[in-house]
Length: 475
Image (cartoon, rainbow, N blue to C red; front, top):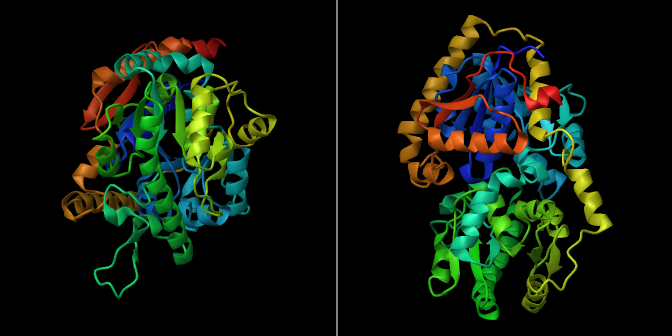
């Protein structure tokens, strides 16, 4: 296929979760001739008017993205969306109210779904608008496939050497234990005679649903806090590694483990390496439960309270489900002693097949790049000069407001501390090491390099002459 003249902008919001799979997409695109930019979503959005015209690979279509999407379309960029949050959700109604809007859907030119279930959800919402939905899978699943297991092998070995046998506890309480309190579902009022206000996580939800979800999550949060010291006492031969959600406040977890000899709170590296190194996973409604299933790693969903429609059934259904601590203790003991059958059931296999594509065959990353290459070949018209000027002015204004006004607002998402929590940064050398590891697994990407172009932004580019064949080309 001839090389395309378009660029691809790949923003990363949560580094520990997204950087590695999005680097795989970036490498696949650079190999195909795209000019690729990868980095912090915040930093990329601040500089959006400086990138050559191309595709912006968004992680979703939330209503709050509409303003930025309009700016990008005026500049001349096209928006393709991964629908990152389209795998685990409470209900179709909740998904539609929180994750999409009519305006954002109209501004996106291509949608990539995790699987058939997600595609059906999107097509029902689009209702014949003409926006294509491609069932490509997600590059996060690519990294769980056998051919890429070696990518995290060295990291997993270092973790095992450092911690010994351990049980991984992934928490998912950012809606009631957020990094800043104003990011929770509900925020206590200034006056006791006033009702709680909807926080950032509650905006867009019906108040009754937000209140019910907050109560459910708060009850689970307390059960998980009580579970950790009880597990610590019950399993003296294993450490406990608590891994909070990237947007959670770690202080409550650190307070719990401070009195425990064999427990740690960790927020570093991709969770896949930690899953590979662990003896078992404990979670409730966490995407990590799905990742553990795909890896063949024993996973237990701890469900001491259960209430529809607030439970997240897909990750729970792919795990062994325990509804009280004694059941959890017995099940974990059986898993650690290798006395329990951990083979998936037919029902679980069917669930995964319906929700997740590209578990074999062509990588999701390549399917995504294939779709972008097809779209690039259509040569869509450039917006008018007046439109581009308005877009650049709007982008500059937005950047100034976010960097110099909103960043100083207490507990705002643009607070520098919160941004550093989400994207810690990665050096040119480390990115190139990661590219080399991907290449070694796939026998590809030999000529790709990383070049820093701004703080927390790199260009992924081919230094070999055009036309050099790749392992994928000859397959």
